[in-house]
Each structure stands twice: as structure tokens, then as C-alpha cells.
Image (spheres, rainbow, N blue to C red):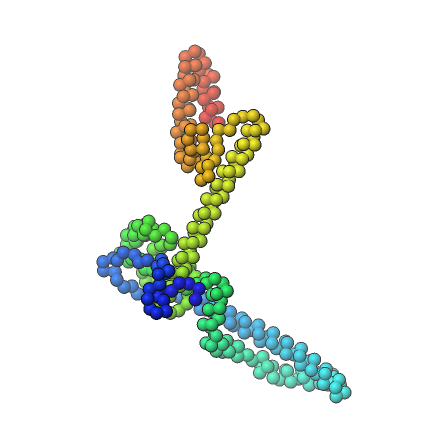
Length: 301
């Protein structure tokens, strides 16, 4: 088995098992819910078997005809019989017995094969693919009399559980869902597999976050290195560098890009106020026309 089980073989709790399938806080008056499922892959599997059955019928028939023609030529050569006559008789036989020759019981044979081999093959497939579970999971997270109340509950749940999407849907109507393939059975028997699915999902999200942060650090480092080269070439003094955590450091303080973007608006407003004060003083000296033109030009920039 490629995932940790909740209980060991002797029935004791597995100390390595981490339960990620947590339960929401209970809601008064809501203990059980009636649910139905519709799983499109059940129909798709039947379709795949049908298509494969049709392929095998034609493929097997064509290959068999080729072998039979080879055999006819062999018989004709060995017993010195005219091959044309044998082929004519063979074609007549194929025409009369076509339905029987093309008949295939592959679907029944396939079902019998799965009955005997499915568990063993699924276990082997799981080992070869590092266990990527195909179990679907469903969690009812509350039933409410209005859509607004349901959406408010969703907002609170998202704060507690940011790792999963939470949807609101009407009771009594069919609505689509988009998890992975669902395999029938009692859900409590699949908890361990669902737990492994949650674990893999959270690990992938953490890896994606680390990769993004690494790309941001690399971009900052590249920008600093370019500035260093430009400073060397121009003889200017470099006023910023970057620390081990990827933060830009100035002469006296660290530079935070997020707060810097927010403060840009305030800085621009302050600059404009100072500019207007300066221009007003100049206006008192009789340069009003020039002031208006300069302010408009500065605002455009």
C-alpha cells in the first residue's frame, strides 16, 4: 500500500498517520443529509470498452484473414493445388459465415478478467504511479434557508479552510461537480485514500508557493546585478543591495515593494503640492502663464 493507514495491522493507531480530513464544527439541527451521485466515468468506461471491442473485432478479423491467406498459399504449394480455387472457396465461406467470424465476446471476457485481476492490477498501478488516488470525496458543509446565509457561511469556512473551494447550490436539483474519478463504495472505507489526496494537494500548493517566491527573489537579484554593472560602468554609487531573504536594502532601511507601491500615490500628491507652492511663489513674481503650463506638463508626466 502506498499511503499511510489510520490503523496498523494489529488494530492500534498508526503514529505516522496525519489526519487531514478534518470535520467542520457541528450545526444545530443538521446532523444528516440525503445525497445522490452521478458519475460520468461509469458511462465513459462502457463507451471505452465498446470502442475497444469494435477495434478488436476488425483488427482480429483482418489479422486472421491475412493468416488464413498465408495458410491457403502454403496448402496450395504443398499439395500442388490451384490457389485461385482455394481463395474463391475461402471467400465464399467468409461471406456466408461473416457474422459468426466477426462475433466477439470481449466485453464479457473483459468483465471476467477484471473480476479476477482488478485488485492486483490496481495495486500494481498505484505502486508504479506513486499512488495518485482516484477516489472522489464529498463534504456537506451546512444547509441553510436562504442563499445569503449560505454564502455568509462559505466566507467563514474559507477563512478556516483556505485549501478547498466551497460552493453554494440549490437543494433538490442536479448540479455539476468536478473532482477526480469516483470509485463506488462506502466513504468511511476510503477516508485514508482521501486523506492522501488532501496531503498531496497541500504539498503541491506549498511547492507552487515556494517556486513563485524563488522566481521573485531571482528577479530581484538579477535586477540588482544589472544595477551593479551599470553603476560600475558609469562610476555612480550603488544605493541599494539585496539580502539573503531577497529583500532590497537601501542605505538606512529595507525597501518593501508592496508598501512602496502604496506610498507612490502619497509621494506624488506631496510632490505636486510642493510644486504648486513653488509655482505660486513664482506666480507672485509675474510668471503665472508659465506656471500653468509647467504644472500641466508635470501632471502629464
